[in-house]
Length: 426
Image 1 (cartoon, rainbow, N blue to C red):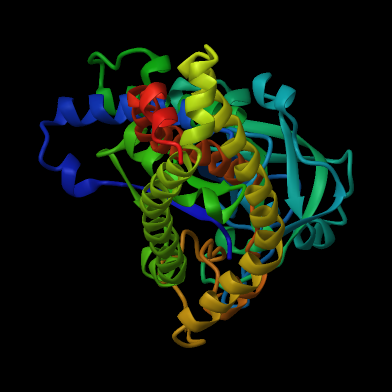
Image 2 (image 1 turned 180 degrees about the horizontal axis):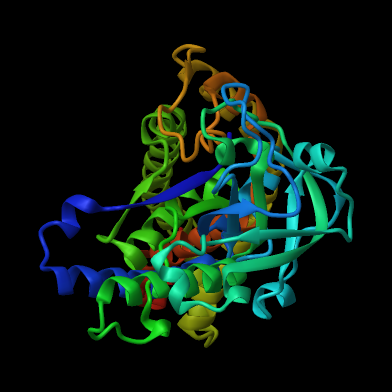
């Protein structure tokens, strides 16, 4: 299962705000996204800007439903703010030749492109070739405010990839073969330039503001975590940073069904741990008290010889500590053998059925970020194990139990009268 979180714009919330407040909230949330994307729990993320263009020195791959292979707006460009995409980690995209754009190219607005192999084969394009794309027609009103070079861009091909989720659609530019991947910064600047020109044309001499203030729209952010175990932690983090402007789509229905057995185990373990700790304090306190009672003569003799009571208490503590360490070593050894098999047995008993669940949500016609999920397959890959931090925590709890039991024992020792003890000897 892909540990994917999609941040969807919470339109219900935004509709309750005034226009200016809504815009301000969205602006703040977008700034928070930058910090969220840098979190260590994330493997990679998509924050895509897209724009349709017209191919100039090459042909798009035509749909079988269309006789045209060269039309206006016949290719779709996708730009990501990071030099990576979720699809390359979910086996939707596979790099066949060359490379993906890097961090430096994103930072420097490089005009480089990674094209689908179907488009490369259609036009016999190879690495190092260039493709030219036009963004506006010269009969558009926006073209009046643009220089000719601002209406077209030449990209150098640095990579060729395969889209394994090809899906036939009616519009040529939405075919998988016609999707071209470019640095997000480059495409954002193109969209900003062309979009601002349209604003100037529509503004009809009014105040259009500055080009830098033009808001470039993005697709819903898609986040791929390093591990499914990070899901709960990241959901809390994301809600802190971007809620309520964004709401989280995590394939909740599926995850809740999968997490149910794990929650049962967690509840069982915590309950058992609490019961054991309470019983440990009571039992150890009782045993220690009986131990002190049995060794009253020894304690009385030591006190009569001038031994300090604190020294006797420390002696008892050290004896208990040695016994506890021996017990912990035995328990730790057994836990590596017993716990995995016991935990796996609980998982097996917790699986209700093997029904597959599929989300209906799809981000793009050719991409489904939420994969089919079989509960049994997830648990087959899940391994019960004892982590080092759990062992350390257990030792710490053991020490706390000893201290609690010795508080009672120390009170008994402090009240003992050596004279009465020795006179009471038979």
